[in-house]
Length: 309
Image (cartoon, rainbow, N blue to C red; front, side, top):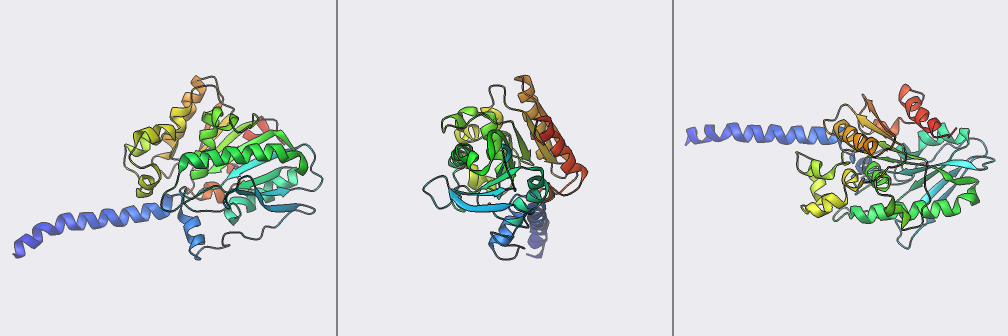
């Protein structure tokens, strides 16, 4: 009997080690780290944190773009905005958690770009912890964008000078819009200048699901390959997209290869797409954007290349 126990110990020990490693990697790299902490009351700032606005700036909160309580957005408006460029931000959170007013989503971006005359819009979209509907979320992003462009003049913004930006799950959603303009066009969206994806590892959903992945991806994308294809920016990309910058963390094994593959396909179709690898944690690609750094300067250089200030 003792021998039988020894025989089982090795596999059990290896399984335990693998479980511990998976949990460590999830804390380090998954898109739900900061958002889950905030939702559970352990993070700093809560769902909607105070934002230090530049002099004369104002914020309009919880504007509606649809009937659901989650279909809301906030608008941060600089003083004297007139024909201002507009930064359209979609938060991350594994398609299940997060909030438009969460401090890491907006604070540094407000500090950096509002003084330069930008209007910042941060949106929520319909989420569920039990059954997230990714395609409905992409639809929400398109609805929100169409509504924002229609109302932009009321805030002194130019509806034609729009940059899409998203982090993690939000990066996947804006990449879907960038890949298939029909998703946005059917809601009346106007063309935008470009897109910045902040560290998505779901640009090729089929590749993600057919390789080793975090368990929460199974809840989000399930086992239906037809959904994987429909929700995959790489597979929805069939025509020249607007210019795009794909930020990827070199500390993750899956982010940069997917960014390179997506960018290569966009270039083959005549688009302008570049990849920005950064030695940063997944969450830092969002929280640190706007701080004085070479990283922020590189993203800002892309924005300037689109004719934005």
